[in-house]
Length: 142
Image (cartoon, rainbow, N blue to C red; front, side):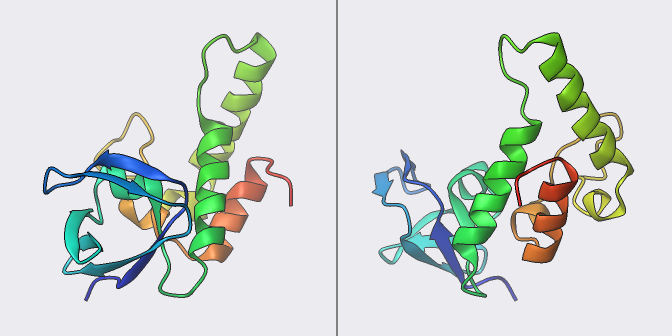
């Protein structure tokens, strides 16, 4: 059984799987059926797709907005950005070193990639306790 409800954690503008351009406001609720997110009853994207991970958060527990905020915070803190100073690069690497060693984080690493880290689909749907743990581990404000 798949998940049944997602929430838009930011405005979603992209072309859906049916070819239609969508503009879904922040906070909109989307239903899911058989692994497909639906917008206004029409198929939008697979729940495992990049678009789903980028714009939507699982909301079956009514905690989708907080889940989305935590996912965004974690991704932002770990993201490499152009023109980072050496200090910023060192800080970022220190965060990644913590992630690679943490048992909770390791549950959400895609196993097929041994030499680099990609978050699994389960990360985007993780329990809030795990996401809070990861955020605090890498230095997000409490």
